[in-house]
Image 1: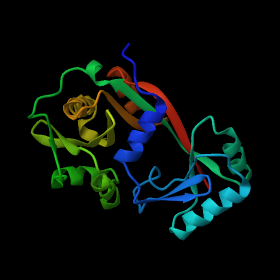
Image 2: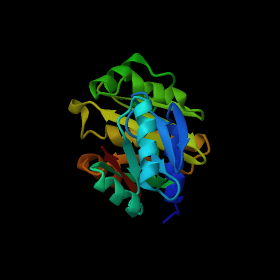
Image 3: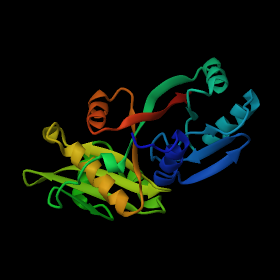
Image 4: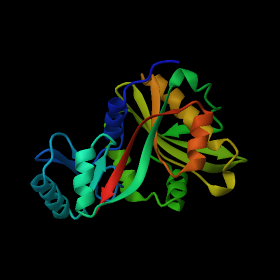
Length: 239
């Protein structure tokens, strides 16, 4: 099996390709200003030893940004997890990072099935809107500094699926994948993944990664069928 980058490389690529509006260094924490762009861009992460006063400072910084306190943790962060648990924080949305070498993902779909474009066409924005992905998340995409694109998938002469992809340090990350309910189980999701892999390769990527909630069984089954495997995980603690 072709070697994949380490989990830290995928986390760094995720940070770069789905960026916060601002990052504040508060003691051992990085506190992010998400401006409505979702949990990943609104969560604080620890980068050193943590104490209760440091947690309190991070909480205050998030409230100053108009955000409810939210922390993103990896499984190894047992001490922080225990401290947040004692403060009444609940675990929400455990997430898995799935990845595969681009060389193993097979040929891309035809141009008439999936095509890349930027900025997002109205048809792509409309599909995202049906899934609750609105202007704040599209603003996150616009903040991405590296190569980026939107994919629009068609089936039976209709636009039925959409995804956002961006490249960082040899990894193409796929975000905001959505297929209309009536078009699911027709292979549209797989076409979006393969299109992103091919586009990423053209921009120097060797691996493809994406994040999916542990509870999203259908998506995980699709990614496994394409040869993606779990390379990392994280979860949130929400106050």
